[in-house]
Each structure stands twice: as C-alpha cells, then as structure tokens.
Image (cartoon, rainbow over all chains, first blue to last red):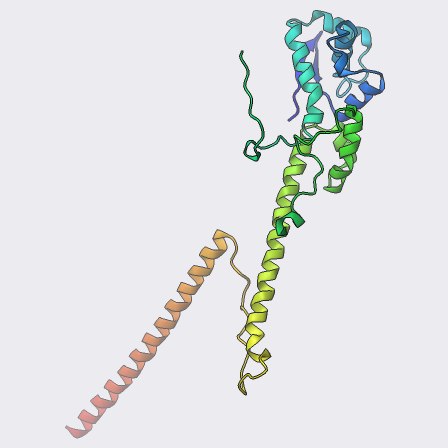
Length: 109
Length: 156
C-alpha cells in the first residue's frame, strides 16, 4: 500500500497520496522537488496541493491553502510529503542487496 | 550462463543509477513504463494506481520466470527420460528382440502432496499384491487339504 495522509476538514474526509500521474502533472506545472530548500514558501504549498490530485482533484486551491494553514506539525508534514512524493520512484527500483558487496551505512542520531 | 538466459531482464536495479540523475521523475516513469507494460501491468494502473503495485508486479514476474524455468527443466527431464527409455533399440548392435523400456505411466510427482499420494498409492498397490498372493496361496493350500482329506476318507 502506498503511503497516505488522512484527515478530516470541515466534515470531509481527505486522503492525500501521490501517484505517478500526479507527480508527472506537478512536474509539468513546473514543480521541482530539488527546490524545496531554496524556495520553501512556494514549493511546500505546491507539494501539499499536489497530494490532493490523486483523490480530490476538484478541491479548490483556496480550500487547500486553508487546510495547509491549519495543519499542525508542519515540519513533520513536509518530511512525510517528501517521502510520499518519492515513493512512486522508489517503487520502481529494487534496493541493492547487502550481500552484493554494497555499502551499509549508519546515522549518528 | 543458463540462469542468465531466463532471469534478469528488468532494467532497474538500485545502485546502477548512473545517468538517471539528470532525468526528471516523469522521464524516469516513462523510462520504466515499457518494462511494466511488458510484464502485464495495465497503463492506467501504472500511472494512477497505488504506486507500490509495481513492486508486486516485479515479484510476480520473478515468480513467473522461476515457474517457467521449472517447466522447461521438467520438460527437459521428460525428454531425457524418453531418450533413455528408447535408447536400447537405438543401439546399432542391439540384440534381436530388444524392446524399449516403457515410458513412465504417469507424470512426476512434483508437490509434496503429490509425492505423498504417489507413495500411498504404491503402498496400497503392494498391499493388494501381497493380499492377492496370500489369497491364492490360501486357496491352493485349502484345495490340497481338501484333496488329502478326500483321499483319507476314500482310503479309510
């Protein structure tokens, strides 16, 4: 199952998800995930709005913006959205096996 | 070499992403699309369905390849057995009247259940044979006893 974010806003249930088609649509509109750190103010709302395309294509942008403004824990939300956005591409590629002499790595936190 | 022939035709493995860095996600999707269409994933599902389904299609394809490999191997086994069975009469200096070994009367048992069934069938067959032998022996013995008893009555 693909990763999704679910919530209820003003009595309506929403499921945010990215498909390959919605990622392609976003890119066609000029969205570039690599700009997320350079232009967060425009990129993050666009990333959020893009997640509506799969299941709630016809929700108006001002409603989406209102939802975005009311969202708590935005840092975590952005991280999750970025994970979701990358999922369609990750699901195309097999992870290299550890036994193939590839590198294993760790983090300090 | 043999396993390479049937195993890895998929173009995407992690770690070999050289050249992909410059591609956008959309271009990557189009690059991989033909492979997924080839293994039976519908176009609409690829673009609009659950993005994780591609993994399932890949796993399914691996299973299919393994099954196909198994089928081909099995077919080879049957052909090999058939050749072995018929080989006695193919020899140039075979004795007159040489006959081929009979071919298997039934397919090989492949699954554990089939193996178990075959074993049970063989045991049942062996039991029936022994039973028939015992019955024949008993009938013969009874007949001999009856004959002997008849002689004794006649003689006494």
